[in-house]
Length: 483
Image 1 (tube, helix red, strand yellow):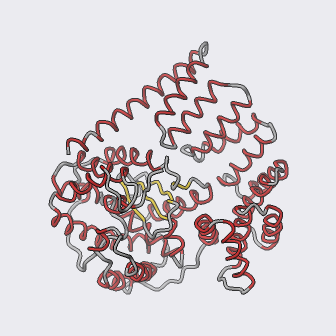
Image 2: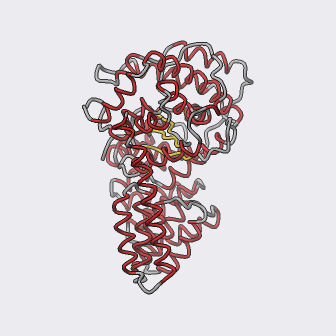
Image 3: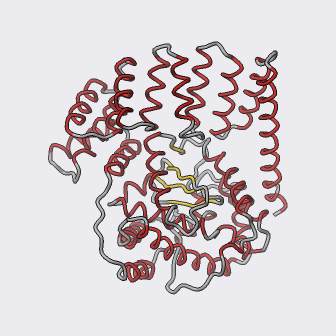
């Protein structure tokens, strides 16, 4: 799968961009040459590619958490009407990026580097400001006034990247993009970074987080970047994080009242889950065993959860069950219950798993991890119709969840409803960024729906819609050759 790390940094206004002091008036953010609908369309096109990547994390706990924090911040932003979507990239690098239309990606490395939930929120708030102020579209306007074609070319540069050092068409597009008024672009992007920091701080404080976390995080990032080798991205090497950026944000937060905000348990558990995903099961088991034995932790619940999850990943199912049950006796949290059920599934005990999920859902209704686990347990017990009922219930809460469509397909397969099975698979592949397989599955569904006029009509309409969207993407991407 293609890498998502290198050109996203350059074309989508990474958190890592340089700042200078002072804050000029950038004008009305609504004066962008792109409408919000156009930005959303371009962002959706990029997201279809990102969702197809192995680096895109669709873990229900992680997705629920990042969107919960993101929506809380967005509600306090300059434009809470934007339909934001937040996601996590399974990459250890310290990075975050905003894309057109309200899509914001956070690398796993941000979670592992952040020493508090407010530091994570500061990164997200900064990226939200890039979106509300339409910085990517405005940068395209300043560079050459090409608006949609230029932004599409920049999007293509993002998607063509495979590494930070290779030579490919995407890098060529980016080089051409940068060649257009490079000095003006640099000054303008610096202004954008200052504006994003200022507005991000306002959002952070208004949403109830500790605004002082932002300069603390920036200072640690500055130290981390000093260790970059010569193979690092040239843009970051020539535009290092500066003491001025830290000083500027610090001077702003000094004007705010002091508040000490405790980390949520959600944040602590998600951070350990990502740590295990990054380091692997075996190494993580050793890490947590040592830390717990030596009491080298700040919140024991997080490390107990991390150990149980690491044991599951290392296929030490019996010990994982023992550890999670010890944790459940001491603490109550939906992620503990989800993990307990997941371990029972790994032990091939779907009935026991289903009981855990269902009892927990009484206390945490609609929780995505518990709901998906419950559906999986039903399918493994050959209760396809009950699984479908739960899928429909959860779909009303999380309609864009690709995993629900995959579970739906399995349920219809068990019920021998081939048309609806392939209809669900089509939607699954569409949400996971595979348009060719989407069309294939729709055609198979149509072949199996003969005699069902309403279903056949719905499938034909959906195929036309998919082709229209793909043609729209093609028209936008034609900017690459025109550009």
